Length: 361
Length: 185
Image (cartoon, rainbow over all chains, first blue to last red; front, side):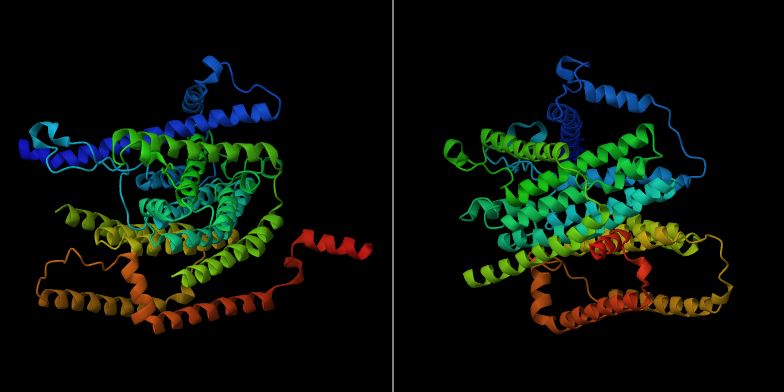
């Protein structure tokens, strides 16, 4: 019995970690939707949802119930298998990157030997990351780039003109802005010398600037703009432009399938916010906190984690703010901007970084 | 044990997807199956401790090239049931190539069974990003440069072909209108 428990223990710990991380991210995502409706309401001189619970705090759950109990309508001439597959692909690809997020610094000062059956023997580190992958940046970029299939296939399988146009626009837009996004990340990777997300945070702590947003400001701006396009948000929400395409790629989707697309969009927003925070704003690092608490202790990890979530929420607010402020691009403007302005700027930034790094070393 | 089980899981999935890619008449289903092949291959790379190759496999093949293929298929909206009788002779070519591949696989099995088992060195960094980069830009610099030039040539060729075939009515309507307005003023 005892060796079995000992073998199963790491899997149980990882499963609990995955459960906590996914649950936490989904809760933040649910409240991002509420925050979006509230903030948009304030920007437009309205109150926003305030009926379900005090100040509308239970609105996300009411919405979820509504999505579950609505009638699920499948278009008669849709390609059934692909039609069902598309929302799953979109949501799975949006959720997968959670596995590599650095939620906080590793807790190293706790002695785990109090656990029964000698489970804690020899364990000194509790990392606040589910999986430390050597190529975290590439993993996140790769998985999110697979997410475009969800949208493209949804557009194709619905057998509707509006959906097809939305899907085509979306794939064209994502291919175009992925390049600029990848090129803007290369500057940070060169400064850090690693593709590991935690390694990038430590490289920022050890650098004289503390945050890479200072030496990589151009890269930051390019990344932020490309992130808006990658997540199909205003001002680049051409795939679901309601004045032209009804609702774009998800016109024919209803009930829970629509909810999956909706969730995928907001989880993607969360993902790019995490990437922005980790790559340019030092991730969980709070300057000067190591003077207050011992690095590796529980309060240090807790404050760092709250700082991490706070930085992400700032980005999410910025998204909502932009949505309430800016008008939509035209499609040719979008393409011209991406290929003729954003990509050259990103490549120039890479070249500049290469020259500076070469002469500094 | 877990590694072997994972290998058979992903390898089986890859073979299933490959078969479905070949057998589907609808090009879009074939493309989706090919994406499945790429993803399961990348999972196998991860179990072989080569995370960089795995990430690049997904990023480039599944995330970029196949998206373009799907894009083109959707744009053309090809008919499903066009009989391709004129390509009959390709069955023979495909069979021959398959036999070559089979021979190659058997040779690899033979070579692997001949080499002595060596315990993997934990400090070995093969498959890690740093060692890959160093190898690419020092030992294998010339092949990398040649491949780069080749890809560049292919891109330029594609641009030239598209330009020659392109008709003026393919230009964006909006730009055309702006030009007209300019002339009127």
